[in-house]
Amino acid sequence: MNSDEIYVSLDIGTSGVRVIIGDMSGGSLKVMGVGNAPSTGLKKGAIVDIDETVKSIREAVTEAERMVGLDVEQVVVGVNGNHIDMQFCSGVVAVSSADREIRDEDIERVMDAAQVMPIPPEREIIDVIPHQFIVDGLDEINDPRGMLGVRLEMEGTIITGAKTALHNLLRCVEKAGLAVADICLQPLAAGSVAVSKDEKSLGVALVDIGGGSSTVSVFQNGTMKAMSVLTIGGDHITNDISVGLRTTMEEAERIKKEHGHAFIDEASDEVLFEIQTIGSEEPEEYTQYEIAHVIEPRMEEIFEMAASEVHRLGFSDLPGGFVLTGGSIMIPGTLELARDVLRHNVRMAVPDYIGVREPIYTTGIGLIEFANQNVKIQSREAAAAVAPVKKNENNESLKEDTQPKREKKQDGPGMKKKVKNFFKVFFE
Image 1 (cartoon, rainbow, N blue to C red):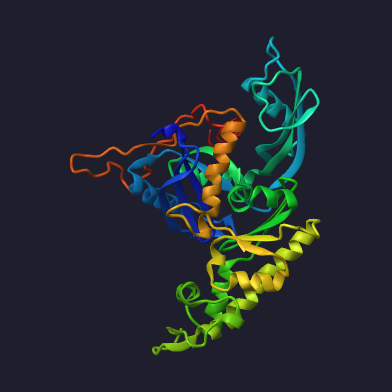
Image 2 (image 1 turned 135 degrees about the horizontal axis):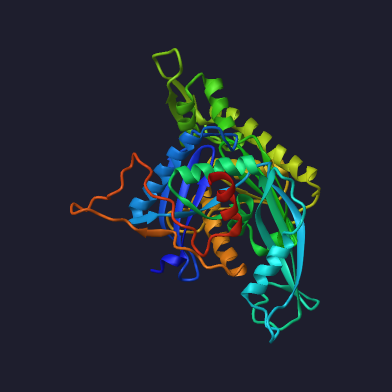
């Protein structure tokens, strides 16, 4: 096993923090470890409590480490939110070598040239995503290395984010004792797993319904054209059940997961269950059909808002339809309701890997595959993300769970310049 080909994704969500350890050494992803922890430090997708978020990160990382016996040192972090902005960028350089062969340093220089544009002081560059390279006028080149030419151009998308939001996110990762190997835009990462190449070409909307927010991203002509985050998600359904049935949020969440149904027409009135209501010692009995009358209106609202957002972003007809992912689509009847509301072809996207065959892991898997693709395109070497866990003579880990588990590792050769700049600005 080559540790340079192991990636660790960190997906920090409103309802939970998920960590996936994946091995890309065989050319395809092999999931080695998975960690989950409840998240209480975020509201509507934004960090509101750093200490609670750090605690959740440590719990999720520890769980993943115990599955594989490795010590996580670097993570690929997903970033999301309405503070994200995308704009077209391009760069042009002359091929530097005497034999006119395009090499890694030429790729690096043209990527740097594409970033030379005015950026407001309150914003920071997160990533540059190449769409195509052009060699002496020949376009639609994915990887120009090894080709001969005089003039190298790159057209792509530059992604920027608010420094404050990025600072809070990276602060949490740093306080958890982890280094940042890469920062990826979550909708782009999820799209690499959830959306096919044909759908991206035709035009498709990816709707990721999480706990506190829902992300709508539109792909067309092979690239992501726009994205938006709606401050509504599965937690609103839980709240509706809690208020309507006069029960606690914990009980409402349990009812939603175990007995919920999103489509009234297919809900059963024969599925009976008891709910402990507030202020009453005796539990009350409800049916799945009755609960569906609470869940369907809110889920219908989410789909209507997603469709309206697609139109607001300037897309009226998407032949690829809608692709649904995220933890909240696990409620039975969601797909049928979506087809009924959106009046379009709709499908669900679930990762096809052992151990993570649930839509809550779509973003985490996407972060690993997207980061691996970035390493290849941008000519970077992957720094080792994990190291063996040291054991004592009783075969117990030497780490203390109550303390920061690791010292921050020195920036490896795979660390992007953008990440170095983040830590230079915020942590030095």
